[in-house]
Length: 98
Image (cartoon, rainbow, N blue to C red):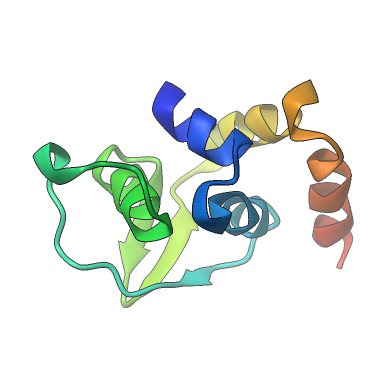
């Protein structure tokens, strides 16, 4: 999780925007090729999202990503609420109101 949090904090290849949308309850359409843990580099958006699926942080079905459950949603909320994320928490709250 620490590597994934680092990718989110540094917005590697716009991964943070995807996580913000997922926490807001939206799905993300993405076409992920097969991926195994030994291949993970976490350098691109697809690699980051694939890694999150492989490690059980996200669900991938029919080219859509979602957060698996309430507990993981809370974990992502805590990550997005960190000082290092700036105003991201406010954005998440606003998206939830829509």
